[in-house]
Length: 613
Image 1 (cartoon, rainbow, N blue to C red):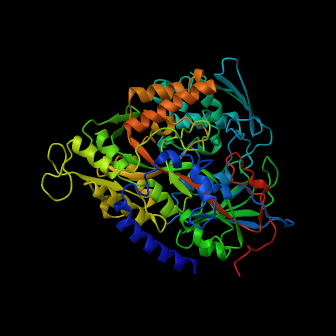
Image 2 (tube, rainbow, N blue to C red):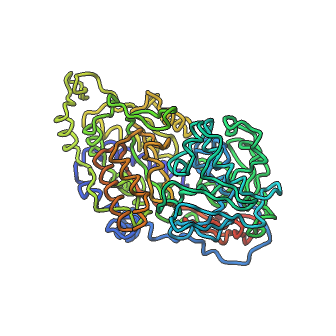
């Protein structure tokens, strides 16, 4: 029933968007991003959504982040956790090597961070390890608690923690974790370049104590600047670093120190885990957890039938169809720490230099072209029509999840196709052959190749809207390979700087630390647009400096950085997001607050999931 009504709704929506939206002028988007960019918390847009669903819009304020399910818990039971995706998960199941979010969701169940965080996302002394810091704020002494063991019974040691730094910093490391937080460790760059055999800033004091000396003190050190994951040296030490990511120890038999331990894996489809009775926080209430892939097209049915108790994130566009009918679950919600965006390929990653290198001759090098493309799309309408207000127009690259730093007052390009046309005209992009599409200022054909992922039911109509919006201002935008790309293939090609790709639609889940250097820094492999500038370098360095320990100063620095990104437009944000997570009524003690992760506390009130009658 829900699937049939969803299909009808999508068909109608496609017609509305493809025929009407682009012709509406400023009618649906004229209020701009200032009104909607803040709507995840207390903006005007949120208040309108909170009035109910009479206008078809919803508000994230209508949802709680913690289960309220009552009842007496049973002993044990198995929780079924769904990954909502139309593709397989990659299966790189280790913190040092994973790159996809679905792998991260799986790892989270069986391997812990050594450091816990508080509601402000700063490290605390409540985790598996404690820390002390010197007066200058750059030397940390970290001590692992007794009783913290790997799943094979071996204790987690300071050698394991140091080993994770040695692997990620190694010249032959193949992953994507090596960034400014690692280069800030004394001696790391010399080690990474092969000039030194060890990292001078990392010292193992004893079996449980590690000392790390950083070059620069700053607020990021306590908010993610210390790598909090150990790597079991006794498991990996005989494997060449270049081969670790593909090894059975990562893909077939991964171990961790978390509440559950991996029992079996069906590659790309599911992971079965059992309770870790030796867990340092205490034996879990559950007997086990099964994580499995669930298609966006069948997720509602899987929840109705109790095939899964909960999912990583529910497709918000489907919520109106199931708001009243999906009675066996409770919907949790929060402002997501994520945003979607359109990225422009401006250069390449230089493996030898370990940094991005811009190409002044790149097809998308002209900021006027990029600005016009931002003006051409109506993200207010996209958020309302595709996501019923549960995603909303974005104005900067620091989302409202970071309330202390997100600046809703920054003026970013809003929907104005006439302005887009004027910018293109003045920049010399004109239709010189009368085919309705613009040529380059040099008079050459301009075809902009657009990469976007497959996924939910609206993935195709959404990308069709963007393409038509750009067509309406005279830009010939075409899908790479003429189709949407599978998740893993999409990121493989974007990361490899496939020359076929000119622009792409992606999404970032931001770190709990506001510092954006990991995705937009010169030395960040995640900087997929390959943008770099001296001003960007300066602001990112200043935002993580000792001076930025002063909150007001750091806020001002990141306000300047947000303004720089609006001016330079290496990417432009499209939508901020609400995260909705349905949880079966039999599940207790579950939360989606960012600082909470206590899987050992999750319990069930009955052996079988509750289903829709």
